[in-house]
Length: 137
Image (cartoon, rainbow, N blue to C red; front, side):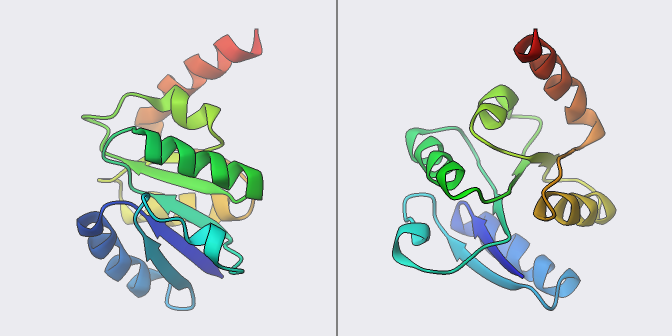
């Protein structure tokens, strides 16, 4: 399985080493949202893990380019400072967990989202469900 880790360098470095330990058979590539490896490579990614610090135009454009490629997206957010869950959902994100989630939550989210499912950490799920109720009405 190939995984793409996207976000600021300090966050990518921290999470890359953890992913290597818990998913030793996974090929992990990294990039900044200002780059776009997807335009320049034929790599097929089973999962993209985003580590956004804030929503900006680069981030939204990047999410849009992933939607066109039907790549599952898991976002790991700083839930204290991040409240823009509806923007993530509107732009094709299939899972949202906080960056301080337990390793069990992280593992479950990666497996479910990479297999085409959805996963939302319990503390985030109430925000997600209220957004989905509004959309479905």
